[in-house]
Each structure stands twice: as C-alpha cells, then as structure tokens.
Length: 232
Image 1 (tube, helix red, strand yellow):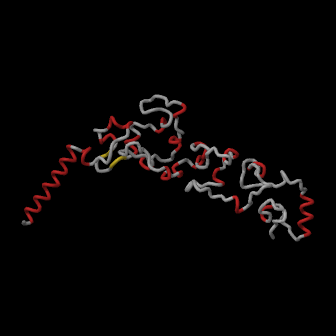
Image 2: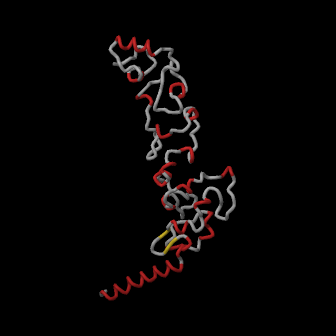
Image 3: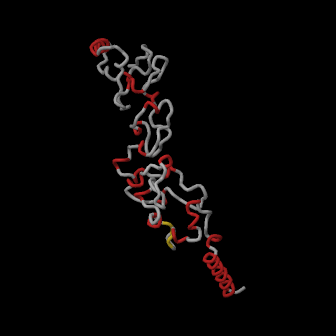
C-alpha cells in the first residue's frame, strides 16, 4: 500500500470521526449523562461549552446568578428555608465554578469538597467556619463556640491539628468541660484557679522553695491531675 493510499484512508477515517462528532455529539464526545437539573440542555452543548475552550464560569453565570445562589432557584423562585444552602458564593473574590462543580456524572454534581480553596473567600470570612459548616454536634463540640482554627486548619480539616494529650492528660480527677479551664471561648489560654483553691501567694511560696520561678503555666510541669506528677 503506497503512501497516497495510506494518507487517503487516514484522512477518510478522520473525516468520518469529525462528521460523527458533529452529527452525533452525545454518542461521540459526551462523557456521561447530565444531572437532572440540566436535562433541558442535553442537546445544547454550547449552552455551557465554548468551542475549543470548554466550560467557563462566564457560561455558568448566564443561568446561575452569584447573588442568588443558595437563595433562589435558576427560575427565580425562593428556595425553601430548610433546603437553603449557605449563600457564601456572594463573598468569593473570584468566580471559578469548575473548581468545585462538574456535570456529565449523573448524581455526582460536585467534585470532592477537599478541592475547594478557602483562599477564594474574602479574607475577613476565612476563619468564620460556622458561616458554612455545621458543628459536628458530638459531646466535645457542643461545648465549643467558634475559634475552630485553634484546633483545625483550612488545608486539612481532619484530623484536628491539636492534641490535648501533649499538654494535659485527662484522668479521673479531671472529667470536666472545656470552659472550666478555658476562658472566653479562647482555647489557647487556660487557668487552673477556677477549681484549685490556691492563692498565687501560696503557690509562689511553695514553688520558690523548690527553685521554680515560672509557676503560672501549671501544665508545663503538671501534665495530669496527679499531684505528684510534677516534672522539672
């Protein structure tokens, strides 16, 4: 088979593939079914895609107005209170819908949430976790109001970055709530004087006798409720 014949066969196949892609795009290039909310666009690829570029946020906001996301449907109807999403899209410094949202994957309308960058939020909102996230509701978190960043990071929410055992070990004498030791919902500070009826004067006298001058940070030496557990 000479080169001209080979070229003709290859060209004919490419032309056939191109024609099939134009005449039957769903069969040739569609990666999967659209989600239910987009079914009306099933035969209108260019409603979301720009030729040779792909899907871009500018196409998305033709239907999804950022000011209405989480508050109204694309038809302008108010979303029921119990179904309402947190309307944080209004506070993004940059609209890049494709980072979090996808389609052609049936019911999987979102990428894994770990791909969301909190750097897209306005700086003043990046540490206001409760604006978007509900508290886990377990016995520990029911005691805590805000200041999530003292234990968690935006880069990796779980596991928590704070390990209480590194600083103080709970024992049978210390089964209490967080706010017993931590004041004003600030978990970076603590006080032992709420329970221990020591005066600073008596504490000072006892510790100075032992050559200890820093006696305000109790857990530096006392890592549990064991009175004899002092470490120097």
